[in-house]
Amino acid sequence: MTRKRQPVRRFFRLVVWLVLLLAIWLLGVAAWIVHVGNRDEAGPADAIVVLGAAAYDAQPSPVFEARIDHGLDLYRAGHAKTLIFTGGYGGAKARFSESQVARRYALRRDIPESAILIESRSRTTQENLVETRRLLQDHGLHRVIIVSDPLHMARALRASERLGIDALGSPTPSTRFRTFRTQREFLLREVYFFHRDLWDAAQETLR
Image (cartoon, rainbow, N blue to C red; front, side):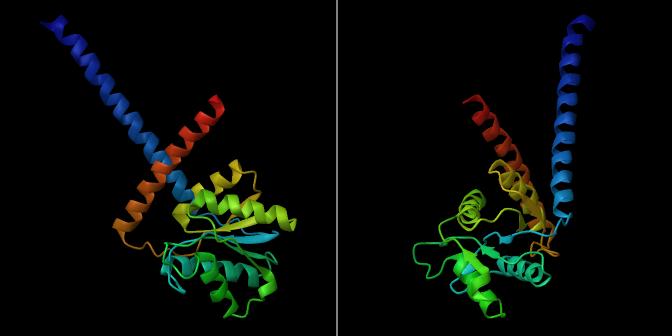
């Protein structure tokens, strides 16, 4: 009986170790995402890129407003002479794109129109940055400061690196995702996207 139980025990120990290793890995990824989101790298750059978020007709959502405000603060501090607002139309009936809403918001706060570039075609973080790269190439700009929510920053910087964008990260000082539940959901989503990005990178390598 003892010999028959040994393979079962070994299998059980193996499963326990695998579960522990998986838990350690996931906690490590989550900790890294939090670490990147707490790191402000703002410095001299050619442009400040504010990643899009939801807008309600002509008004930015609280999340988007926090991003725009931080971008304006960086501009006023002299980190860059150009602001790039990203984000397309939230739906078929939307009157304004996210980037148009951001531009209107900035103009009303005395930012010169000549300092603002926008793109209105993107719907995702990846598309935000693809369109940003096009604007950078068209206007001879190079180093940028990426502005987004703290927990979103790691994914934004990974995408920037894959696209060949020389990017620094400057997360918003505070996040509108304040409750434990919303922050937990946001972090879990970013952990998922981390692994999806790994899978996509592996697929590209194999092509």
